[in-house]
Length: 303
Image 1 (tube, rainbow, N blue to C red):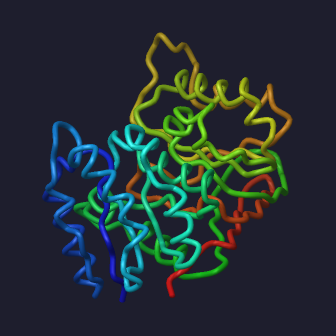
Image 2 (cartoon, rainbow, N blue to C red; image 1 turned 60 degrees about the vertical axis):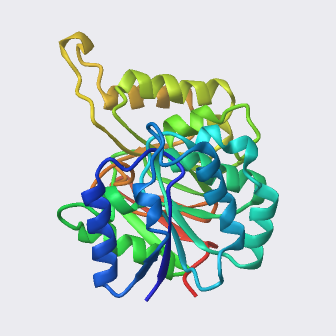
């Protein structure tokens, strides 16, 4: 069983009941959860003051070797305020000497991409304490994929997609699209060449998703990738004003500008059902025109 260290570098955990349920559920499976005080910590809309949250991040460099997993409590907003003061050099050295499983998504993406850019550290974009492990009904798909991703040195995720057939390989990276966009032009965006970019978001209308993807296109980032995979983009609905402009139409328009494949449909992101992906791992993508398979390797696993 694992020793799990909680971290809350972003927003205050509004749903304290969900967080408590997540801790209880993990403990029922035999895991030990420490640093639980991070769940209730609060300053304004954040999970503590900037100095408290920064100290918690930098403390990862000195965690005892017994810690197996570092798990984000929730997302929200807050990591962007800390990036300049995070001691990436010290963190990178510590994580190279003693790799850990670091997992979260949403706002946590900014820290994860910063680690990848500054240190080459692979982390996992996957479930968090409150929203996933603390859900009223545990999603078996999400639970199974999480433990598979952090336990097996090579694993495959598969999903249905109606894109053209393709084969590609490279570094898998990305995460939350809005957070990735916020890092463009900064030292915390990994300069990935020939990668497989996987992105997701929530509460973003298709035109906003298009605008963010076009920013990556105009910055030359999309054209340097071998493939783009679109995960979950939920939380909005089109209206009569859109007049047929849907997420699928947006994807087609984007595909017309690019000579690399765009695949959609991956269950990844702000959903009860999500796969866990190691950001910075090596990925082999195969798509036969109906089913896509992404095989991942080179990531840290539980000891």
